[in-house]
Length: 92
Image (tube, rainbow, N blue to C red; front, top):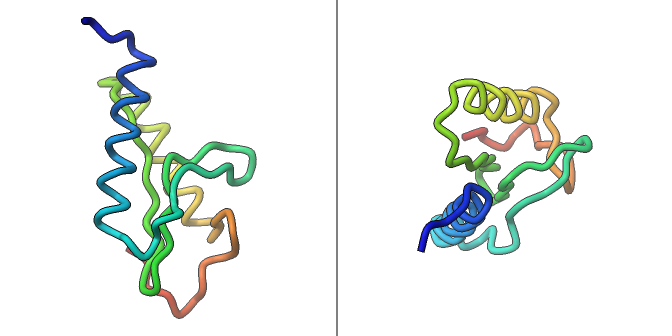
């Protein structure tokens, strides 16, 4: 069975979120969020750190650049969906 790009993306994102929840079990409710009107594929907040994820199956340099910019913008603006990053929290 061949997967179309949307199905492949959905499966990849689901698996990435599953692994993230295993890596950061204290952030078990982390996942996709809308921040500043843009979807973030994963925000996982733990005691020590906030982990930001973007997932893609695209091999396009343009897509990688856009996703990287989304991560940088989110971090630069010190925004998460729930609250601003705490200054004392280590950023990963």
